[in-house]
Amino acid sequence: MGGAWWWIHARSAREILENFAWVEVVTDPETVAWREVDELEDVDIDAPHMPPELDGLRAKRDAQRGRPGFGALADKGVVYLRRPWDGEDDVDPAVYLMEIGSDGRRTRQVELAEDGSAVRSGPDGWPFNPPVVDLFDPESAAQEISRDEFEEAWARARPA
Image 1 (tube, rainbow, N blue to C red):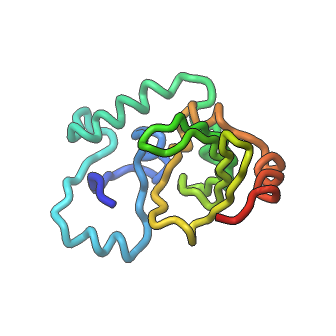
Image 2 (cartoon, rainbow, N blue to C red):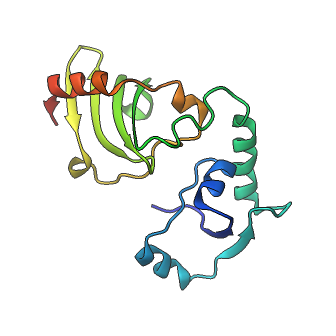
């Protein structure tokens, strides 16, 4: 859906994720080949100066680093989160229970409305499924729920 792209030279994909907030490391050969035709800026992770957008993402990650919960979800294969939505963007207020894969993308979701109704959905019902969770962000760790809580809500919810 867009975004900024760089070739970041690092010792590992994890090092990139640990040092820059809200980035996705792309390793899919088809996507990499598609981007190789573009003139992307090469960046070394140890360089003192970064492109402005990337520098801002590094500053955000640096601010998160010492907080409780930093990186707590990064090594889990699947995580379950409870996220409130306050009704912005003309969407009614609700609570979203989400099953999140190791890439930060939703795999399943339950929307709990204020009236008590619950609707479940999955990737087949979403036109786009970009990463929605930065697994190193300490705020995401504070939203973690158990798999049992998610599964109970999933079983009660009606299909979208």
